[in-house]
Length: 99
Image 1 (cartoon, rainbow, N blue to C red):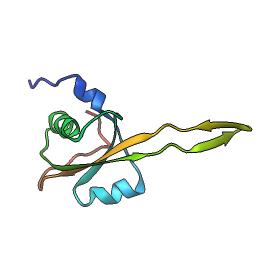
Image 2 (cartoon, rainbow, N blue to C red; image 1 turned 180 degrees about the horizontal axis):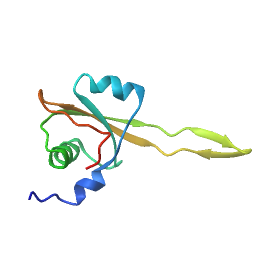
Image 3 (cartoon, helix red, strand yellow; image 1 turned 90 degrees about the vertical axis):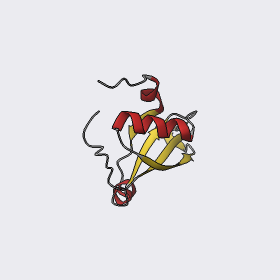
Image 4 (cartoon, rainbow, N blue to C red; image 1 turned 60 degrees about the vertical axis):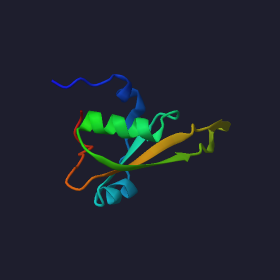
């Protein structure tokens, strides 16, 4: 049985399931919410080890948190870092199934 470093679970927080992410999956791309301190090499290693696939490239973005009003009180949403992972040809990840 393969050994997985527990730190990989700290890098990948959750898959992103949106309309845009679904369209990207048709082009062999998967979108994940990742830890804010995670680097591209860490994300690549975590995806390759956890899902047993070959990663071609990793692009990251940080969505800045918005200011919202809830019941007259001002609050702010947290910043969210996302990773768009492009997989090699022939590799797929089905995010609807668990690990």
